[in-house]
Amino acid sequence: MGPFSSGWTEKDVEAVLDRGDPNELLYVPIVVGMNAADCEQAWAEEICFRLVDHPHFNVRGNAILGLGHIARTCRQLDLSRALPVISQALSDSHKYVRGHAGSAACDLHMYLGVAVPGYDLAHTDALVSIAKELLAQRATGA
Image: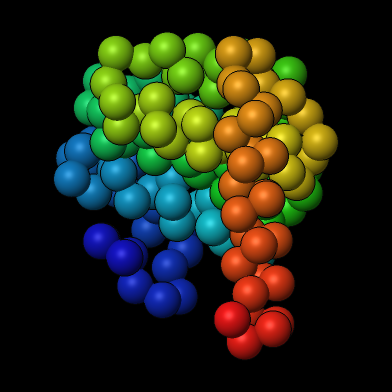
């Protein structure tokens, strides 16, 4: 994915962070978030938190999404830091960030049972309802 190949290391991530190129940085929180269960979770969280205020919307949005990935893959997250960051991102000036904040808030609700301030839980409930309906249709062959 982007500058990362399979078998990436923390050193590879740190090199991308040091270069600071937004076209590479946008991959960092996705890679560490999706793989937080396989690396140091606290390190993965810290990487995402370092990028949540980045000036480039793709990096900022993906950092928020990375926190949601960590909640989903590890079933835990530093909520004292994550809740205010995700809540603030729900009001970001860029639609991309707001959308990823909604996805992260949904992950926190579904996998940690936590409500992010400012997130309408009805969105998650609607997604769960649709998923159940699709699974039922698949089971009956409809």
